[in-house]
Image (tube, rainbow, N blue to C red):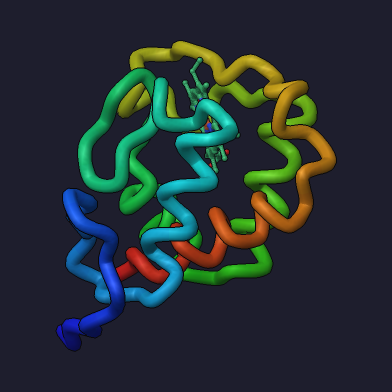
Length: 114
Ligand code: HEC
């Protein structure tokens, strides 16, 4: 795995192994839109880890973006019952239509597939 040295602001830790240049932005956008309350990069919180999402969609950025947009707009349930025990994702009105940020998030997630 290639590690990319980018200007990481003091105190900010890139916890992702992917070394993706957009990791920082993706993580920041996810935080800003409130996704991090339920999702972490590599561990399951309320929702599946983004790495698990990346692997399920085989790192297909277009598919992941579609899924992100759909879940944000309409919520989602039943796809991750094995992981979450059946907790649904509620719609995220604060993130709906924030296409640029959702793209950055989808790109960040897609870089996590192994
Ligand atoms: C209140 C908790 C919560 C918040 C906030 C949340 N999610 Fe989720 N998310 C979940 C749960 C639970 C699931 C699993 C749903 C299922 O079983 O289909 C999920 C699933 C997903 C999936 C996988 C969808 C699929 O069908 O494969 C994506 C992608 C996702 N969330 C992205 C996001 C993004 C981006 C945000 C922020 C804008 C966000 N989530 C905010 C709880 C949350």
